Amino acid sequence: MKPQNDKPSKDSGAKPGPYGEGNYEAIRQYNKGVKDHMEHHDIEKEARDAAPKSDAEAKEMLEAEQAAARRSKAESPNVRKANSTK
Image (cartoon, rainbow, N blue to C red):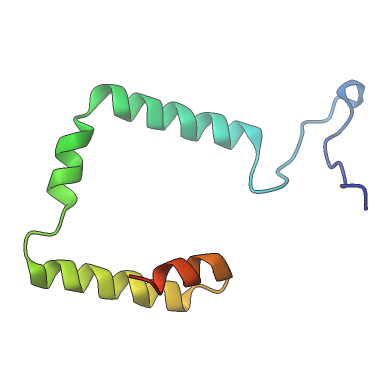
């Protein structure tokens, strides 16, 4: 089956709308924000600050992650399989 092309032709004058998982403008804005954040923030410090401070906090974070995964309606079977090995 040939994939559907939702993009308007170059000469149509219409702006391309969102298709697939988003739209090109949103992707550009997101990438620009990530790049800006990485250039102006201490990413390693932020990662250390976000890490659990105790075994109890680590357990709580893991349980929250697992609860969110159970609620996910669009969860991939591959994600579920990978999480079950933890």
